[in-house]
Amino acid sequence: MEYPIPLQLALSHLKDMKDDEYLYMIHRKNPIPLIEIAKDKKYLYLTQSYNDIWHILICKNRECNLEELLDV
Image (spheres, rainbow, N blue to C red):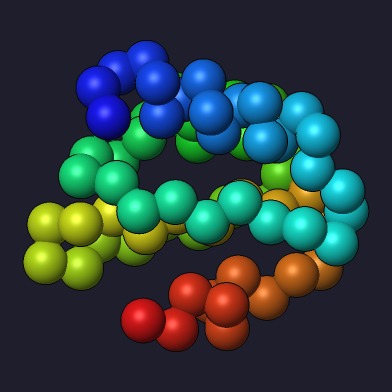
């Protein structure tokens, strides 16, 4: 998908996300605008790159272990 569609979809999910849910995205780029929004909203987030593919996890629950969830 081309910009801004992935960002729009992610923001829509974040808006409706419950505390026990998380957003997991696989993207060809590091989604810096999305990460900045997650930071501003005090969400927990993790981004990691594997073979030039970005794996992104965002969660409202700041006690969530995202490293454990992102075991790729």
